[in-house]
Picture: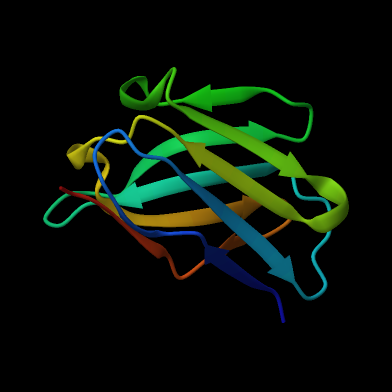
Length: 114
């Protein structure tokens, strides 16, 4: 059984940084896309960043220049470095892997507040 486990969330002041990690366990094959989504209270889940197996990267406009997505294929792990955090970045962050099947993590809370 495949499980995705996010870590690295927490409470940070505006302007601070956090690094999220998402590690996969179990028999997982041929991951094409690794992505981070987030869902703020009362809002729809949105795609934050995506990285394909060939290294093509997408960022939603609101995080460009502040967030960096990367992946370690050997470890089946995807990262999200978040810098210059803003209160509007507050959300639960989820990782999603897409290959033959789709897998989701349970989320990690990020709160940006002074």
